[in-house]
Structure formats: structure tokens, C-alpha cells
Image (spheres, rainbow over the protein chains, first blue to last red):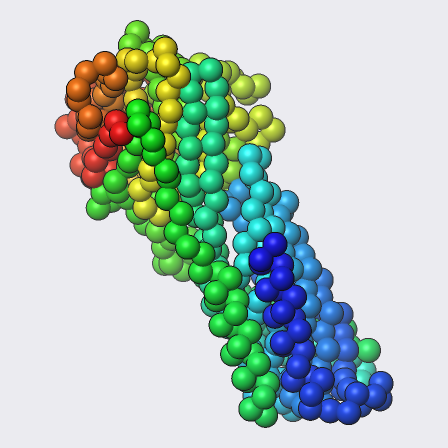
Length: 180
Length: 242
């Protein structure tokens, strides 16, 4: 429960810059919004992206994932990214920021919710009529680990084990965004 | 523009706090048994990915109990890839040469005629876990009737080839170990008899031999002269009676 409360606090805090630096009216708050499909080294996610007029953007992603060595996409991930545009031109955007989220790991004998944090840099290229489409590549470092305990009991006795789930540190993602 | 960075930094620190969980340890009581695997210098083994990039792979291994007559009692711990057939790009190779002594001692035959758990029927009689990057510790509480028993452990790396077990050995050769994605050096088996009715409080499992190189039987081969590096996957396996 502590994790979920902290996650809500996190979302609230990361929303402050977007809210605090502008007069909130429907016409000027966001420069662009987009839906985003991204394939990364561990998950396939759908996201909603909002780019503000102040070089900041946020992205909320929900996806299916393959964690914990089984190479089966039966896990889930939710993450929030906050980016700052380092160099933005008409057709390109070079950006960097942070990613934070939770992984929900399903295993035949246990379930685990594990938080993670990371730093990501990305490059997006806009194309099409009115530059409504964008393809992006993101590279970053992810940190996250959580201990879990497992036990098995039978008529001969009981065995217990404490294991550690650790994120793969490499984040590499390819994405497509449609802006509206 | 300072405010956004400040709030991102605060958020990052907050999440780091969430991510950096306190280390939890097994809690032992009197007569509990600790089984500790201490990794050796060859615990991690290079596995080629692409473009010359290697992945540091930990071994596949299993720890289990037998009675003093050599009958299988239960698996204590087995690595997840073996327990759930969670191999990546294995092209149907189930790696029967990985831990054959345990497979045959356990004696459960699956639909394809092999003694290995499948994706559809994963191992549930014991603990399975992601292959640890270092050694592990288990807590065992044997039932009151179980006073003498044997703890066995079997370890194996894939593509751990040497001159005695080369990659190019052919099926049917005595040193065939599963082909280009096979074992190379066969699995090694460690064992010791644990007697709770003595005053001995610590045991070190002894290396008793290697398993079948191609996984076609559950025999143990005591001649270890063809093993050149696999005997350093594990430094020691310590059993302590608390």
C-alpha cells in the first residue's frame, strides 16, 4: 500500500511544473497531444503523451511485458515519463528526462509489484501532413529491485527462499506517436 | 525553468526510496536447516548474444532431498528456466542434458517423453526462482520423522565447451552434449548425508561426479578428469543445522 501512496504523490509532484507555469485554459495548456505505441526491450505499451508549451512533456504508458526470465508477455507495466526538450525543431525533438513506474510480475507461483526509476534520452522525428506522426528512439538506464519470499510445504517439511527481482538496467525503446 | 527540474529531482528521490527496499533475511529457529550455495569464480559464464556482445549467464541448478536409500523426496529449489521451460529462442531444444541426474531421480515423464517440466506443466513441487546472479540460501524445516536424509545439488552451464566435450561432437558420440547450444561440460552433482541425530552442525556437500553429458540417463560418472572449469561454478555448498 505504501508503494501506491508514494506513486500517487509522485504523479502529483510531477504534475506541478505543468500546472504551475501557465494559466490553465484549454487553448494554451498543451501544444500537442498524442497517442503512442512503443516497443522496448521488455514491454509493448500504449501511451498518452502531452507536450506543453514550455518544453516539458509527460507520457503515461500502460503495457504488457515480459519480466523474470520467462520471455512470456504475461506481465504488466505502468509508467510515467517526464521529458524536457533540449533541442526542438520543426521536424525533430531531442529530449531527456525521467521514467518512473511499476511492474506487475506474474509467475506460476507468485505475484510481485516492483517499482522502478530511470533516466532516458530520446530523439523524435516528425513526418506526414502537418507533422502529425512521429517516430522516436529512446535509450536509458532503469533501476529497480524488490525482494520476494517463496515457500513450499509438503508432508516431508517446508522450504523457504528469499529472492530478489531486479530490473534489466538497459532501456531501449522504439515508438510511434500520432499527434492530434 | 528551475521548478520543473526541482520537482523531477524530488520525484526521483521519492521513487529511489521506494525502489531501495531493505534487505530481508531468512529467520531461522532451532533445528531449522540452512542450505547455502556460495558461488565460485565460474558462476557467471559468457553467452554470446550478437555482434560480439556477451551476456553473463548464471548456471542452471537444482537442490533436492533424497532418503538414505537414494529415493527422491522433493525438490527444494530449481532455476526457473528448468522449472517452467522458460528458454529464449531454444528452437524446441528442451535441454535434457542440463540437469539429468535430478530429472531421472525425480522420475516424472512429460508428454514429449522427457523428464523435464514444460511450459504447460511447470514444476510446482518445490520452489523455482529466477536464476540468481550469485549464490542463494534456503531455509528447510524437515518434518519430525525426517532425521536422516541426503541433500543433493546439480549445476550446469550451457555452451561450456572444452576439449573433452566440444561443440562439434556428433549425436551418439560419447562426448556429445546437446549440440551447439548444449552443455559442453556436463552437469556436476554434489551430495551429503545429513543426520540430525548427531552433534554435527555443519556439512559441506561433496562433488560426487558428473551427470550424463547428453542427458540420456540419470547415472553419475565419478571420473572428473574431463571437467576443466565447471568444478568452479560453485565454491561450496554449506548445510548448517541451526
